[in-house]
Length: 416
Image 1 (cartoon, rainbow, N blue to C red):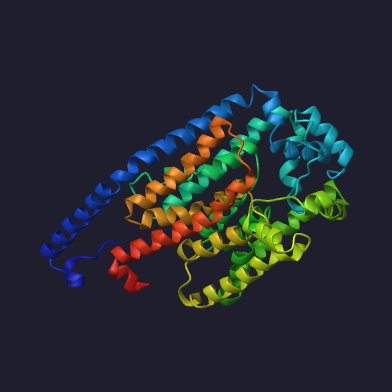
Image 2 (spheres, one colour):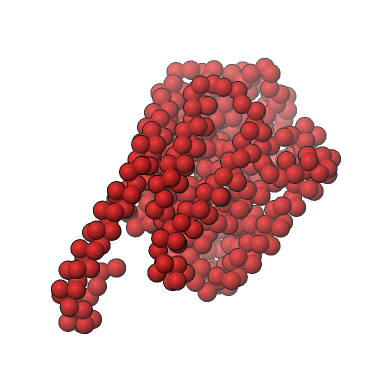
């Protein structure tokens, strides 16, 4: 923070010059302290961004590739919506998806986002599969780039290149490659954090993007509700209600029976028993494979913890800082969470990266992304259960980054 004139605050000019020199020295120390991490950061950033650029060049030229990804589900859903057909019709969806290039080894795939997310897929029904794939991919890239830039701005526009870790974060790239919607949810969350203090109504509307994947926001959602009530942020709540109501109305106009058909689809045995590489599913399979309620026990406990965590900090709650840990816990304890959903960890990880002075931690974060990206490039088939380590790893990394920063900054630790 810039100080007022010395005549007004009693600070001597010489003292200010010494403080300025000390600040410059601290900056130099920070730059030299990150030398060890520079190489892995450069490698992961270069590899990740090169993969993204290559992918965007290949998608328009390879029709089979465009239809062989999760994206084809959203494209097929859009085709059904444009013709006012049922987006949960098994026969129609299978025919459209397989004709677009989906492997014959797959059965029918559905858009599992809640029906209020159907308007997102509608524009894809107006274009072909390859053009739609390119536009969809560009939209995802824009979401990632805009999210990282806003995080960088909220962190004070630091001169370091640590934000490249966010742009090349492996789960975010996986989301881009398969064409999933987690990056839309990431943009919604970052917009909320950026706008909640200045434009609460717009911040509330942005939460509609988070509602595309509500199961990933359960503990932090409990915190949000408590924060709205304590801070009386009713404009934000109104924005969220308007956004959700508008999308539900649009869904009803496109597919009046969408909610009934969606519930029937989600109750199908194949979907309910599907293995998802996350803690909740692993816990159910270990304890009682047939008891689906076991998958919701961790997130229930997580909601209770998150409410207590918020309540003890409610007087000085700062979403850009205090919301990071509940977000990571939400990902860890979600009823189901795929690797590509973990791009939502980017705000917390970048906050930790800017805060820590540990070269080893920065290098470890970069190398973890490199390992996943190498697996993508090499085409090695790794069982999905292997990625059970990911969500706990991001949480542990963030805790270590914050702890190490506190150790090196006694003054900031006392302030907290």
